[in-house]
Length: 388
Ligand SMILES: [Zn+2]
Image (cartoon, rainbow, N blue to C red):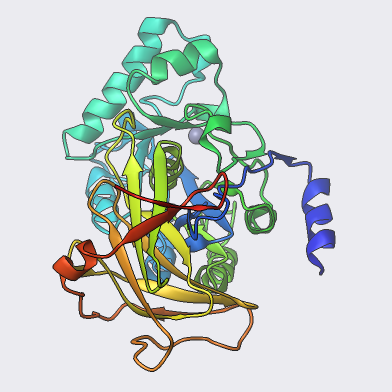
């Protein structure tokens, strides 16, 4: 199916799609990628109600393929001491958390928050979060029961968590200014494949929802088949699959980030500076940066004397290096070469391919990097200017 017809297929499913805003910065060779690893889109698997089937079927399937999900549990049920409750127990949640999954709140008793008073909503939030925090689970996101919320509810819930998954049938934009962190989009319905299409075709974030697995709603084999479909998309850097909070932190931080590249006159060394404003309200996470190195090859890349992981992307004539960069933690230095002493396998000559290299690369001496005559390329004019 062509990309255009695929897009049409997504549109007719009734999904409301928000356009994304480009993060390109003119002539600067470096840009902050929309999604981690410069994926085309992002995708989150969320699981509601904390059912045993999620533990018994979904978690092993996700673990075997290296995916992490977000599980929204009802606080009143996680301490049940009897077998047969059909709900996830705290001991299982702790195992899941240790495996990298996110545990979020689905309130304490799963009531429609719109029908409750302010004090009742506060109680739903407090008891849920306190129950989980007693076991070391730090809750950063909530899924509204029934996917329902309103401004009054959001204002109260926002006193307790940073992010909430709402019930609007939307694909969330990667532009934080278009994102309501307390009503993040949810794709209603059971067509999970349409969610994948929406994310990868529209450079967007699809937040999908599952309930129990293997008990009539969705068979274990169907779920496994679906997760298998995620693997090639992840491996081809089409989709970034991660927890709700991980992706929300990334796109929010992008909104507070500024990136600048400086290049030596001979074009062989690039210094990349990534700064995140102090107003960014959450802990800093690495952002993925893409730097155009067309015409040359990568010799080394490091940040603060440490070599960093990267991959090379070659699309037509454009060659770029893609890497995760910690903000406010010193520049990334990229050393380029004409080829003879390139220290990475490259994909020169092929189109649209990438190669990965996460092996250690010797770092250039810090003193020689600092001594180079750096110039910056400005996004506005594209002209070169000297830096102090
Ligand atoms: Zn629910």
